[in-house]
Image (cartoon, rainbow, N blue to C red; front, side):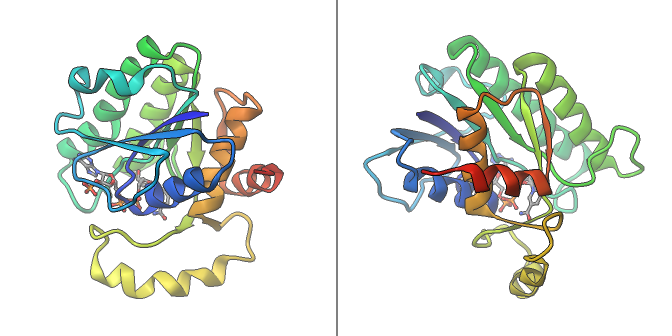
Amino acid sequence: MKILLFGATGSAGGGVLDACLAASIVEEVRAITRRPLMHTSSKLRTFVHKDFVNYATVEEAFRGLDACLFCLGVSATQVSKEEYRKITYSYTLAAAQMFKSKSPGAAFHYISGQGTRPDSRMFWSRVKAQTEHDLMELVDADCWRPAFIDAPPSPSLPRIYKAFFPLLRVFKPFPSLYVSGSDLGRAMLQATRENLRKRIIENKEIRQIAARANF
Ligand SMILES: NC(=O)c1ccc[n+]([C@@H]2O[C@H](COP(=O)([O-])OP(=O)(O)OC[C@H]3O[C@@H](n4cnc5c(N)ncnc54)[C@H](OP(=O)(O)O)[C@@H]3O)[C@@H](O)[C@H]2O)c1
């Protein structure tokens, strides 16, 4: 499989990247990032990019793909509402449009989040719900709603969360509350293989799909 990955420098995306590099079914990973990656792998090609609403200069990265794993995102506590909407909605839809035109019919996987609802009182949840809806219309996207993703924390994670991070592993026995970054990546690859499309996939099902992966 040829995979396009967004958010590879982040916590969730880093876990997904490791899963892709370890998977025998993945031949190539193209990562679009705004800073270089530390990973070295013959499977990995990095495209350092600045403008995430316009992908014209990295068009070649979108050609001939089997799947796009969209793990780019930001916490609503870290940016203004306007910026949150731009990063969550506009960046994602712009990538999906380019993806559709260069790799029509390939699978688009979007990391949304547990608690996403169009009628939510939470702003972030409504923005993610609109993003999910429009991606499902545009590219038959699978929308993944993980709870806590256990993957190495990224530099952008506030220090207080980093301290609590290991404690959150107490949720591991609970299928609805915990998923490892590696299992999230394996589940996305398995869903591509099984041709699952236009689905909302909650945490428990993410773990079930990952358990079916045998690569
Ligand atoms: N972590 C979890 O437990 C969890 C659970 C459920 C859902 N999610 C969702 O998963 C997504 C990623 O979360 P995360 O925890 O991995 O966050 P993270 O560690 O902060 O990583 C965010 C990623 O997005 C990129 N990014 C952020 N703002 C950007 C911008 N303005 N322009 C370009 N790239 C930008 C970051 O790039 P830089 O490295 O360059 O900053 C990084 O690669 C989010 O949508 C989040 O809601 C996460």
